[in-house]
Image (cartoon, rainbow, N blue to C red):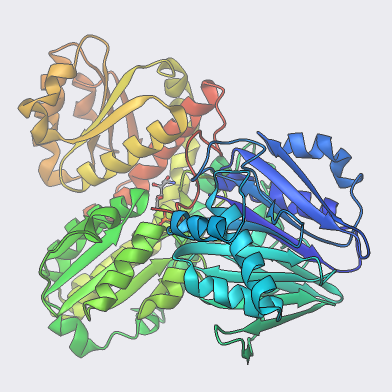
Length: 612
Ligand code: AGP
């Protein structure tokens, strides 16, 4: 997704903007640019296709453009191919208005036609240029304030945006407007900062503001003023960011991904400590009453990607423990389905970023239907977190690598705790079982730590298969859910084709793809399904497959069949995903590294998909 940064204060803006953009590279981009203004001079705009280093070189690290007010952008193309012409910032032809944008203006064609009739011409094929010229049009037509021009434009634009705009008549000032796309604002003495995400400003300030949809802001003279759509000033509280600067850095690891994989035992402990207090699972932050929990007729989990895979685990766990029907839906599908839902449905939206467009739209659809909504979110103050009826924060800290690991594991713990508590409140598990599950949950952090003791075996195995063409993951029940996430991790960072299959489904088609040397990874952590999955593995082996087995210590008979086995510590079968997934994350990581790929920023992918 695109990244935006802005700075106005007493220092040179360009170096601050470039450094901020470098902290947003993980969001995925294909061009970049910045606009800097010296008080009484013209605004200078510099853009470059490709990586940020092109922009660094063009501006000699920002030293060649002077000015203490500026905006910057990394572009992930949505309208118009990646090019310097389409890169942001965009400006009105007379330079009166200059701006950058993250999001999509859905009705930009209609607005473009309107502006052409008013005499505007266009040099790019972007929706952003239309937005900037629309603001310019209203500013000149009504000749009022920048906030007035912005508000008139916001009323006309449909879609999503995090907009930063500078006006020729207002040197030293930055104006911002937001709808759906992420935006964080910060102040520090005489300086104002604004960006798509916290890491871009964390070096300069921890004092931040969150801005809501259809709100605007003026950044100038070390002060940020907020306005609503009517142009009235609104008050906002400052929030202090608790993250350490290091938390957003690599801590000596080669990649953010391996750092975040290693953080998982600590993250599991942290999210458990936020949910288990004095030996009890405490769901008070969900604001769900016992009566509501008993009244729910079903739970609908809606998410995308890895968050969806957490939902697949949750379905098995919650249905088995709480005896409540659980349905899972891809957010991109849910928002367009016409499924009837019982009014006593709890809709759970799982999202690391809290900004995924499909998940946010699904949340709004659920609310429009009058359903109770609960977010399980990592980024504090994100859209989903603020718009859901209530939220469980996963406290995984900033997750920089595009491939999610620690946030996925934190989400797992959240759905485990929700399942156990629901089961206890609904009377489907005894007091003894409730205590036993809590004890098992509290052991997860130390159990997962043990897995790293064997990481060299995974690293060795990964190097053997780094040139594989097809890799299949198979499992039953929760092992199928584990296979889904293991397969996604592998393909998204190694670019090797991989599929996850319910093991019993193989013989209905896919086994035709298995040939001599095909790697089949069998996941066998569920005791009652072990023999069934073993027979599926044997079917694959008899067709020449190379078998890797992922199972618990003690299942040593597997070595009569598997060519390579990785053992993990055993815990309650409901929670085995937390152990198994670390092995598969390490496998994916080492395969990607052995292929010399950009592990943290895989091609075509973005950390948060804030467009449809
Ligand atoms: C997972 O590694 C991917 N980066 C992707 O599938 C991700 O899980 C998905 O886009 C959902 O993102 P969210 O959790 O921020 O909503």
